[in-house]
Structures are given as structure tokens and as C-alpha cells.
Image 1 (cartoon, rainbow over the protein chains, first blue to last red):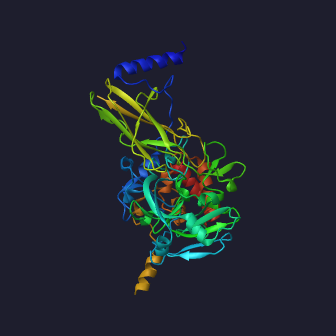
Image 2 (cartoon, each protein chain N blue to C red):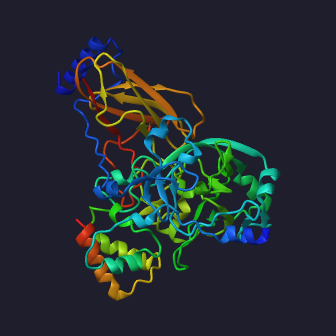
Image 3 (cartoon, helix red, strand yellow):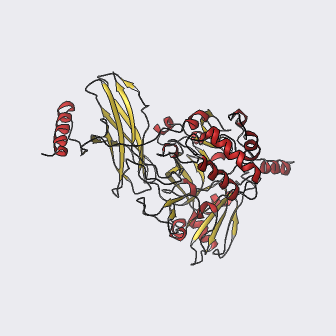
Length: 410
Length: 92
């Protein structure tokens, strides 16, 4: 018997005897090393809990432009409250838009009949739909990168899950008449830089993604108008893709016959080609070495345990969390309580749709006092899972390293 | 009157009312050039937030990005004191 099989048999046998539970599904020969960094010391020192107008206290990463992170406690709820939803801006000139004067322009060289919409017309003239979807900043968890990379040093909370209500982007585009040469659709919002020389935040998506039935122009989240800080009066929703494409305060939608050329698409928000398990590609923007970030990778988060939290021997420990991917569907969440030696299936809770995150829970009764290292790992219906070591990329994206939290049983 | 209010609401830029003046950077040579240039477009908490893990070349790249990509009108003579300050106080 080799070492791996020996460990497999003994570890499984001991656990089965001790807990009276089924044999673990996956057993490693040794504990895997998961490498999530601590936040940089300066990030911790300069973070404070503060409220933007209309928001509850959130973790301030930067004041201007405002970048505020949702504390993990809120992720114990299936939908993230609007007033606790994270805030992320690139540029600090952020006009407060009036619903009455707001206009949405649909045009571009691939639009046959350019037109304008008021908010009333947007709500009235198109079929209304609602989708539950995770909105997550591409750089969520950047602050946990090994090694650290510059940028907004987010921990886990540059994300949220909400019910987004609006109209299908494709219905609005169809009214403008979509030329068959359309390659991309670009979005601009009302926020801009202090200086004219600063590239305006404009994003494009492939035409096929713009025509996807799930891509929306949303004006409500969780049954209420969008908060100012989350894009009032309307924003783009691209379920499954990172939030960089979810243009806030959208004022213009442009159908393009040529790939969009602008800093935020051409240069920023890029990942190295071929390093990540991504299905949906943004081919018209690829270059020799990089490609735009698109879909979120499979990920999970333990939401109810704090590092070094203590439990009494004899009391059951319930581990709760959430898991999500880019819309293929979470198939399995596995939890380890012994540092990754053995894994058991967590119970998946109610399914709110394939773009929503999925809550899960796992209960166990520690058999002896000591330290327990708890890990959670999600897999989706495509068989994709989380990594134990972050795949380096200079911008700090796609951090789905398996999380590890130590708890103590006394 | 309604029109004026509307205009005011459109023109009014919300620059995160929370208290940015609470940010205290370390004292040292070059702080004046940093404050004068960097705070035009963003609050200065970006600096401590991105510390301490960058070496001089990291901070140099950041300052150059601000000039070349973000259009920051930083005078050439201000660049060395800014990079020196960031390296000395927030560099690895």
C-alpha cells in the first residue's frame, strides 16, 4: 500500500468511526496549501467603517472616487441589502442624476434608427424582467493576492447578490435596428474624470453578449430604485460577467461596426490569455498576450465563521456560506474541517436561478478539543472548481483560492 | 425655480462627502508635491492602501501611469520628489 492509499484508508476509517458519517468523497494524501495573503498593512490601517449618504457603514477603501466594501456579515443573507451593497467608481466626478431629466441615447454607426428614451418610456415600452445575479468587481479579493499587486485592495466584499429588474438590452437595441455588421455594443455612464484628459469610463461587450436574453438595462434592485451609488437611474446588467461591464448611470448605448478603442477596454481589465478556464471569450478585443476579463470563475465564501472563533466541545459547529460561478450552476460544495485532508459535501440551499449565488451549510460535531482548519470548495456543472494557489495576473483578478479559516474547540 | 433646482441637481457633483480630510500621510520631503498633484483627482488614501509592498519601480510605474494614461499634469520636476517620497514612506 502506498502512502496515499494508506492515508486515504486510515483517515476515512477514523472519521467514519468517530463521526458515524459517510466516507469523504475526496481525500488528499496531505493537506493542500492554500495561499491567500493577509491584506497589506497599509490597507488595514487606512480602512474605516463609514457611511456614504444613503448607505450603512461600509469598509472604506478610498473616499474619492468612492470605493466602499460590504462587510462579510451581510453575505449571510441571500440578497445583499441595497444600502449595504458595495460601491466602486474609477472616476470621481459623479453627478447625481435626476430621473426626470435623464435620457438614454441609443445610436452608433451600426444603429439604423438612433433614438432616445426617457425613464418612463424605458419602463413602459419594453417587457419587464427580473433576474437574480451576483455583481462582483473583477478585482474582488485583490488585497489577498500573493504577491500583492497595486489597485483598490479589496478583501471579500466587492460583491453582492440582488434581484435586478429592468428590460432586455436586446429589445431596446432591436428598436434601433441592429446592422448585421455590429461587432460590439458600448456603454457610457454619466460619471467622468476631474480632468478632461482622463479617459472616460466607457465599456463595450461583444454583440452576441448584448443580444443575450439575460443582459438587461436595470432600474431596480431588490424591489427598489437603484441607489445613487449603484447606478441610479439605470445600469447595465451582464449576469455571469464581472461588474466592470455593468455600467452605472448609463446614458448612452452605442452599436459599433468596429471594436471599441478606449483605455478601459483596450488596456485595462485584461487577463493573460489561456490561463483561466473561461468559456465566453471577447474575441474582437483579444491581442497576442491578453484578453478582456469576462466570466466570473467558480468561487465560494464562508460567511458565518470568524478567524479563531471558539466553540464549546459537544456543541455542533455549523459552517455557512455562499457559492457562485458565471451561470453554469453550482453542482457541489465540499467542506473540510481538517485542513483539507478530507472533504464532505455541504447541503445546497434553495436555488434562486443560475446567476444568483447559492447558499450552503455544513454541520459537524468536533470530537475533541483543539484547532480545526475549515475550508470550502465549490464546483460547477462544467466540472470547474476553485484553485489552491492564485493564478498570477498583474491586475489581481480571478482570485478563487480556497479559503481557510481556523476555529478553536475548547 | 424648478428649472434652477433641476440644473443644480444635475451640476452638483457628489465627491463622497465622508471625511477625506481625516487622511494623514507621513511627514517628509516631497509630501507637498504629492498633496498638490495627486489629490486633484483622487483622495490620498490610495497611497497607504497600496503599502507596503511596492518597491521604487512600482511607485515609479504608478506615477508614470497617472501622467501618461490618466492625464495628470504633473510637472517633470515634481516627479522625482513624488517617487522619492512614496518609496521612502510607503515603499518596500
